[in-house]
Length: 184
Image (cartoon, one colour):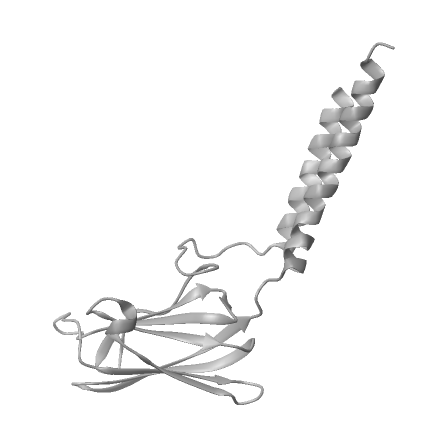
């Protein structure tokens, strides 16, 4: 029985080491949006004549719907700007495909934030820009947005396979131990 527990501990340590090597650690704990957290592009900073909060969800962004949320404030009064025109543009860095979407209050579901839900069909690196035209002038935020392919069943199998192997080894050790102790 002691060998069983030693084998279980050793296999558990090996499994944990393998998972740490294969699965990247999460860097953001907030879980908003399908498949991950939220990436903060601009965190309540003054850009041009506005104070902006710009986020992207999910993080990591995957092929499918990616949501860009923009909150605009007047830096002097902290009043929310509710009458701006906000446009999100993504340009694929390899083939130049351009995706453009207006961010609106209707898409965000509240009268403060602007949101654009963009359907992205192609993984890759995109040069992104958010352009704001408001009552006190224009502002622009530029950043790089990486979009990864959706995880398929193959990835899930690759991650789950070591668990199945460990369970099989533990089951065989247990069965072998129980047969040697059973009366004949």
